Length: 312
Image (tube, rainbow, N blue to C red; front, side):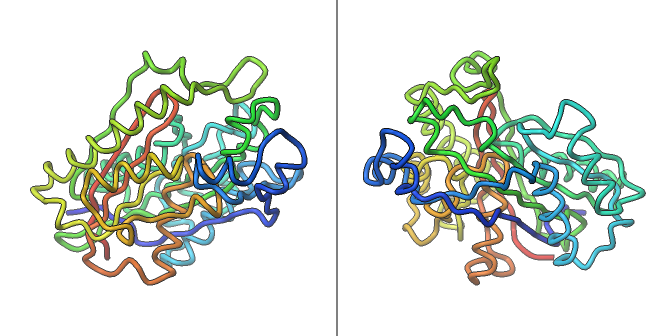
């Protein structure tokens, strides 16, 4: 039995904040942001929207795409670092609001690697026959933890949510291999301050991400007995275009084989990989039996990567 994605959904807020908008409120420029990050605009949630609202919208979209009723979900996993409050968990709010009356629920705190952690966790429950279907959501309202005095981080982040319904898929499809990792000694380089704002040592995080994304991509391919030539699409966490390009080059892939949505949405942390998957699927760039490599990295420091043969 293999576990894989049988339905994908996403939600991005309506409000668009461009680099030119940011120029008006801080000492920065469109050219400075684009050349250093690849970001052109990002979405910000309304004041009346919380992380759970974004998560619920993405979850409903995923359930609809999967053709699965909420009552069939056995477990709800929400990857987030921007919970509405300390407790109840966002997962419990989602479980209630979508009507998943038979589901257990919990949040995962693995920052930008959270969606990968969620997919891998779901795989264990499905392949052990504990649950038939698991809903994995990555959702963030990062706009509420931005330090507007720090232009190096303020220009990076955006809000959004993505969701995947995981279930049993046919032989040879689904998640083929995975790697999860952490380095708590690097937590000091990316964290939430006592003032509840993001602080980041960009240079150290950049070095970590460039090294780890490439190594993990190669590692999961080796585990699956596959080669770089087998990869149809690389879907990296959308953090910084230079970090993403380094992973693509490590796999020796042409530009068209890497998903790129960072220019439209910025860094949406746990939501980014799922949002990119939805975009590529809707654009017709993901077809049945394509081999995907998904990679995430983030605060903790954490990282996760997996290979997946697409299709039910």
